[in-house]
Length: 203
Image 1 (cartoon, rainbow, N blue to C red):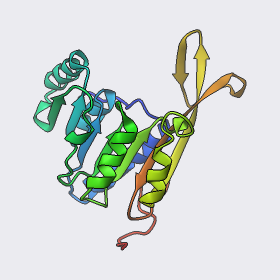
Image 2 (cartoon, rainbow, N blue to C red):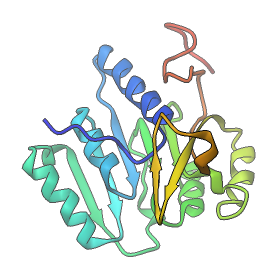
Image 3 (cartoon, rainbow, N blue to C red):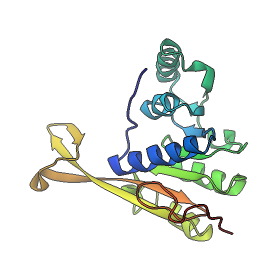
């Protein structure tokens, strides 16, 4: 079995891992939609999730697809290769997790929020350290839709032209921020991705 980690912060990965585990304990499948394929695609497949992924880089998509086939994960994967803009390809058929980690992230977030049907799902938005410049328009969407959020910040180390993310970092060498935000419309969660109140429903 292949086990890989998504390229997001460690805290967000732990949150998602526990979110999926809680669903497994309840005998529920986890359905995932992704803007942008990659390690996260393989991670979700390795956790037994069904995944619909949209990818604009056709060569990259084929690598992900071939890896999924090699590990017999392809039966749970629907991978669409599409030129940009691709944000309108999202149609909420009851997804439990939506990941926004591809191109045109503001448009993707807006389309998801405008068309969402399963309001109990979580929305994973990577690189929200860019909210104050590159994704600034997302702030009004977050306020407009009254999104709740847990923001997981992690420092990155820089060595030459490479950046490394690690739990054990030297603070004097942490030049960059990496933040993954998990948004949701209903419920209350701990930072471990578990419901704050057990066996409870929220309006």
